[in-house]
Amino acid sequence: MTNVVELKVGLHCDQCIKKILKTIKKIEDIETYDVDTQLNKVTVTGNVTTEEVIKVLQKIGKQASNWDQQSSCC
Image 1 (tube, rainbow, N blue to C red):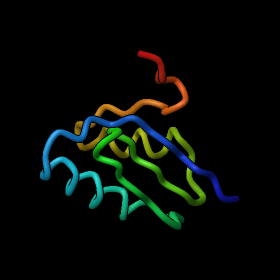
Image 2 (cartoon, rainbow, N blue to C red):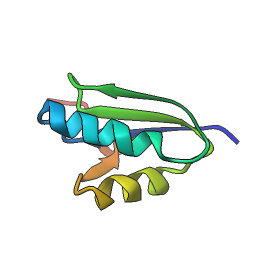
Image 3 (cartoon, rainbow, N blue to C red):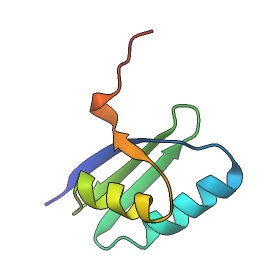
Image 4 (cartoon, rainbow, N blue to C red):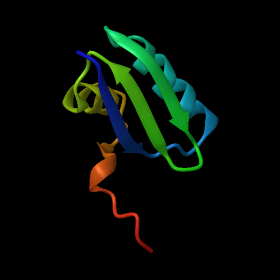
């Protein structure tokens, strides 16, 4: 089953981004992933759950939250 997981993650510097990408690549059953530095958004597609991706990012010290829970208002 393919899910699209969209998360808000603090992407402060190149080191953070490299660490996140390296970690995401290790997740089993992912098909694609994308990091949007403008929006601080990480998108992972594959046989994964939001909870799985959040847990993996928390292990490297990154706070992540569900993108849908973010207010898009000013």
